Length: 119
Image (cartoon, rainbow, N blue to C red; front, side, top):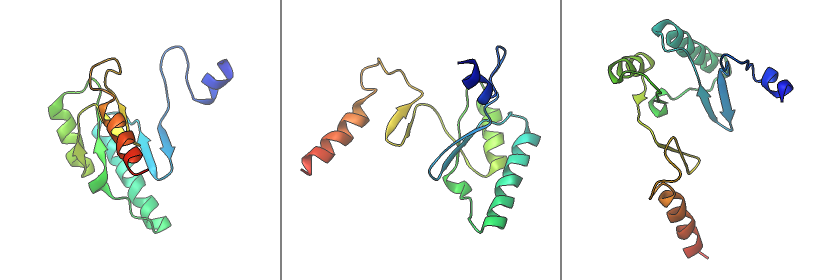
C-alpha cells in the first residue's frame, strides 16, 4: 500500500495527483490560482501546436469543490470553458452525487433498459 501511495505522489498530509487520463479524456487537478490555470492552458495550446491535435476548450468543463461560484466563473472564463456543477455523468456513470439517494442510478438504469430494448 505504501508503494502505491508513493507512486501516486501521496503522503500523510495531502494528495499530489496532477491529472488522470482515460482514452481521449483528461482530468486535471490544478491549483485554483489564475497563474497556474493560465500555465495549464498554455501547455494545452503548445501540445496542440506540436502534435497537430486541437484541444477543444468549448467541450471542456471546470468543476469545483469548496470554491466560490464567482471565482469558479472567473477561472472558467480564463480557460475559455464552461463552469459546471456536480453531479456529472462521466462515461455514462454519475460522479459526485449520493449513490444512496433515490434517483441517483436512474440514468444508468435507463441507459441499460434502452440497450435491452434493442435486443
